[in-house]
Length: 335
Image (tube, rainbow, N blue to C red; front, side, top):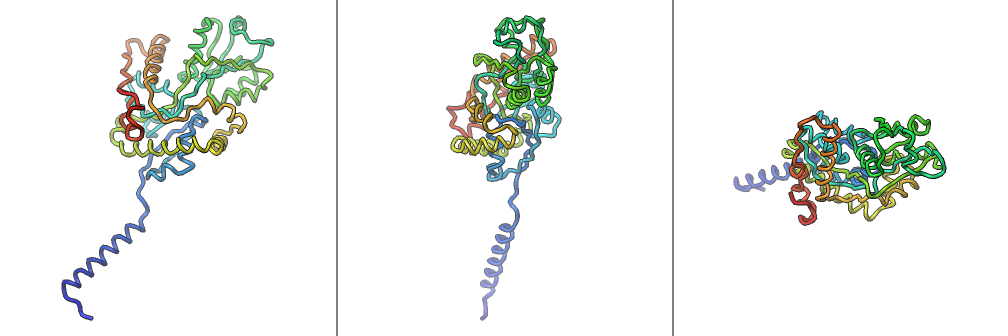
């Protein structure tokens, strides 16, 4: 069969197009890599579910995870340039921003309702804070994090003066053994380390004090401002994966708890008991800004910020611009 020149050209063109299509189809899908700092806490459920259920992968993202026992340690990696995004509580971000770090809060991923537990070694049969602290007590907490701010508000509310206690800076993972050995009289820390401490010491040997009118921490998604500006599409995809995880978590609570039990090494019954204190919602509320303002004033009053430090405008740090692409605009704070 003979072909005209025009037919030959058309046939060759078709072969080239098909070849290009088959080649491109056979190539691995290009993904964007995000270096994520993730604390090993049950409050990270949205992120961990998105990882386990491949919601990030579906958005075209490869997530390189580095785990930390506390968000403030992940913040060090972000500031040092080894991480792109982190999920700490808001207080370390308040302090770092007040000290000049250019950070952006992109979303809230959890608010823990009801405050931190203050776990105290028993001295007597009943707990009366004023009587308990009549003797000077040694309390371990996470200095520079939400638990320290919680202890400040607690002692202020219950009129326990600074000469009635000594705050000890300690890593969360070291607190259970320290409390069990009697190295400290009490601890103020987030879950699961509070529960680990209770289990290690013995439920019959501790008082657990809670006050739902005191500070409760908010877990936030944070990145360096410059990096966020250069990677807005990547961040939007990341938020989209978290939105999928929120829906999955809401509709598959038992499976989510299994995932988080494996992740945190917290037994399922204990995890189930503290689960109602977690919101696990992707959001950004105006109260976050007022909380950070209050924290900055506290930091200034207590010397955590250098004299003369200007407290930043947190409305410029907490931005809902990218989250509005994922959630209805009227559910996001207005700057």
